[in-house]
Image 1 (tube, rainbow, N blue to C red):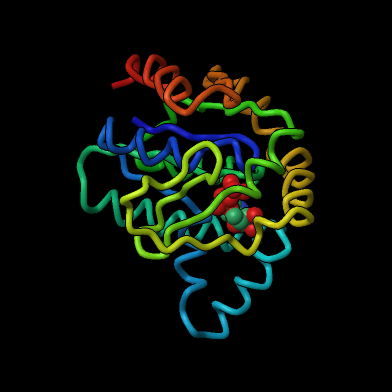
Image 2 (image 1 turned 90 degrees about the vertical axis):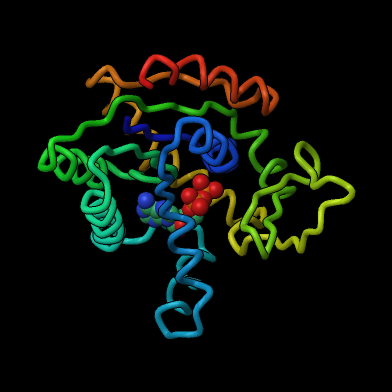
Length: 214
Ligand code: ADP
């Protein structure tokens, strides 16, 4: 089972990804998480990643495809069965073509592309309230999904979660990533998800779809 989560920043992909992976025993491949992990190191490369990430611009396709190829091949060598969830990848047509070819080579294919739909006007507010726990990497939202009172968390805000960078990321999403909806529609893989609903409702709607692919 191979699923892709596609949608604007702040539409809840990361939060849902975690729950989906647990429920269907999928391995999550989030290029944003991989980059943030690399960013933590104290190296020149980490500094370069921090600089690009801080602008909200996309990283070069070549670099991202290489990261994904490594991850896929490692999992392919480990497991006979391939159960993946992509979150934040692919983000351009070039990345989508690459993924298609890579999977085809190893006899695999994408089962389903969940398109998260959320109007731009909600996104800035949502992302501004997003916080991450330093220790676990778990994503919270101060308004819609705050940590519980007794939860021991050390929250921080992502460097690209400021109002002006969010605007940039949105523009990039519409110009470079949204065309992938039509791309995958041609393969009849697209399922639309109303991401403006409550977390649990979104989750249930996703499960209703993914149960068909188990
Ligand atoms: P969000 O979905 O909230 O925008 P991500 O964590 O997926 O956040 O990505 C954060 C940033 O990491 C992006 O703005 C971009 O700079 C970089 N990035 C992540 N995935 C990709 C990708 N597939 N291609 C290019 N850049 C990426």
